[in-house]
Length: 213
Length: 403
Ligand code: SF4
Ligand code: SF4
Image (cartoon, each protein chain N blue to C red):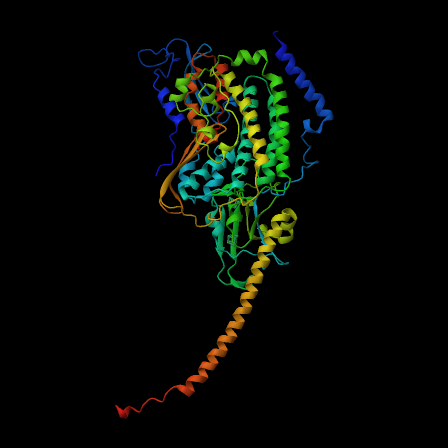
């Protein structure tokens, strides 16, 4: 009969309308910003630089290797390497970024920089309320604005942070073991060299007098 | 070294393409001696800012009263130089750009690109990653078709209601994507030789819940409008795409299948692990808007079947080929074409490598663009209101059309 299809549709609309008062599954919206849906753990927005300890600039893990700058698809990272070096968490002398800027108006939140960084030093933040009245300056973040503590990282991505901490601990242990081995090797080498230095004195044959030839 | 596969079905299709007369519906506009439009024909530029064009797309339509006598699609407003950019960055850096082609289906775009690079570099995808790929791709197909049907109904005047219902369900799938990949739409999830991260705890149960609950939503959705008399009269016998023309114009995807051609790359190429799943390929036989609408609904039901099987069969194991490299990835010189059955049609990536870190040539075969080329043939002789519906039934995304 003409019209039954329309009636059927109306019944469906009514079911959804009434259901939205009683059934959670039919009313999925929330009233932001009073009410917020908790973020997923994997959520990513824009990158930040991780630091350990209290001093953001001293503890920054980034060694200014510029891999992320090269790999970033829209080329929104700008790094200037420092002239001098300082010791990093592994106790090795490393460069640090004299300038580290990310233009988050260009950044496309792709996470490639995080994946390619070999030093666990750049990670994704979950901050998304970044609207601003200044279109250019406010969205160009420098290294002071980008620095966030490892505790912050642990808070927003607990699973990833635990993995990253494990990697760092392993590297530290490796570096320490290597340093220890180095010291031992050095001591051994020194001892050998000493022994060698003593040895030649006794065994080097006295050159024949030139007059004999 | 060509990797394209010529199968039995492809050959059969080629045989059909010999039928003549690609433009059966053409009614030439009346032109006077100087080449101007004669009589009371009216030329209208529909778009680029028109809500029905699904983006920035223009149709130059010549109207005789309300009847379309000529239609010229004009695109390129959203051109972003995707292919050239990709030729100047590393292989990995193009992966997030593929998300932005067809922004409804970033995961299938990722897959097609990964497939091409895997062919090029000879990487083997582990079992678990293959399953994850199938699951995410079918979820993508589900949400794409859900949206499309919602938009299509909105184009027909069912303002808001069906679209809101569709978006409500789509959100659930996007939530799943977010907890897996970190982003709702720009997923950037697949990597050459596997996937980026493993499924988080509880994800599989979430996907299972969607697979179990979706049929109920589809039933409701069909109750809402499938039998609606207004919808039937607006869609049946409107925008007919003849079988021969569909094949001649290289149309793919649901639009081709609505015209009755049995061609689905999941069955033809059996890429990934699609040969392990049992599903059917729904076919239409009129090739009109109604068939294209129904094909989507039926495909969603088939996708759900694949989802159920994949979620049952997913094994444990690694998710990425250990041979793959993130930094300094240089495939050996050669060429490869990777194609998949995207929700909109055959999505292909053609790559030539010269052994450097950047592809020498990078080319996308976008299904939306190629399906759009038959728009004029479908619209001629119909009223301007039908043009909106016909365009909606092709399912285009301008990010992919213009690249
Ligand atoms: S997230 Fe992507 S676009 Fe943003 S800085 Fe990192 S690599 Fe660049
Ligand atoms: S963030 Fe990582 S990849 Fe980028 S310069 Fe610093 S250490 Fe290198």
